[in-house]
Length: 439
Image 1: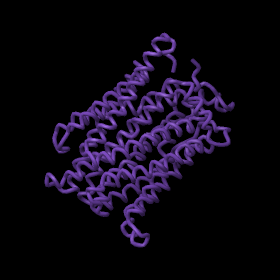
Image 2: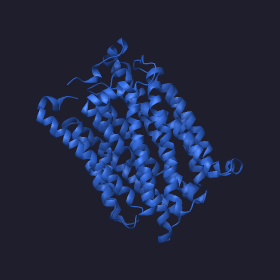
Image 3: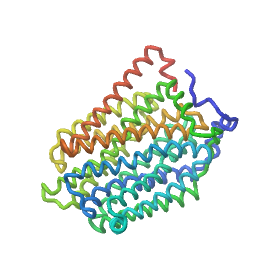
Image 4: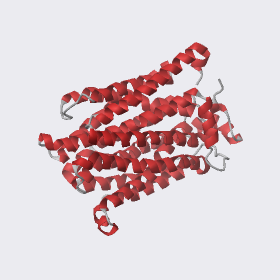
């Protein structure tokens, strides 16, 4: 089996694989890790505070909460579908650092507009419409940042260091999510929702400065004149492991959005039934989701060992299985304030670590060096399609059936990927140990 990662589309690309580790300094790797956390703080905080802002500031009623919150998320994901692939190509063509810095600045502008939507809405004909616009701008900026950070992790790594670097990047992203829910989501009950939303803008501005000051481009520049969709399609079609990575992105990337959005919704709108203030409910949900992030942090090093020792496909199958079981168990939870919710939450968290790391490693393994940004862009477009589908259906299920329904739906989707991965393992074992060792 030929590994496309060894194929070059320019002389620079052929030389680059041997130079990556020598050119990157330790402070540049550390800047990448810190920016990974900051990017996730920005993205996660924007989603986490959304239900509280819509409920308490824009006064969205309970009967419309699931659909409206899901619609906001879907609108931003539709935008991502149109731009994330192109941003990946631009990073191959112009350099990743430029795209990262510009993305952070655009995201900061959207974050400043979001809390002001209640005032601008009077002139614009509707505060909710202005909030939609602000979230679109934030998403536009964020979609230029986080895929290029993942691409830089691939650029900075070699075959020997790839699992470690991508695992470290994933660890810092999980740390950013954990910090939001465990610490920053305590801010609304003390300083208010608007102050919390302004913090997202500050984080984005700091990210732009840090990226400009410390990141470096080392990847060869592509000679493609436009996004090479046909080449990417050929790669995915010819490489089964790349197909598994894309399938994992389609079904699993929506999982953390599910947790952040629908778990927060569940707590906030269940608060009235148990006599708890919405701000306090949001804080408790934040602690729970923060605990999930803590479990992800603890298990990522274990997944790193599992990936190196047993393989990428085994890690994908194991992670998806754990997540699926946790999501389906959430269907048996009636009261989100009950301690039992920690059992399925722990399973989902442990599984998510593997679902996040292994597919990215597979994608980097089988991507041409001077097209890594473009292939990761297509990988993320696939994940965006999954988010749109699962979040939109989940919002309807939340309103029509009840808060646990979106989680069960997502769990069923994860089980489909498990079946596909196990079938691939059986197929490779039938072909012999040589096929199993490839990639």
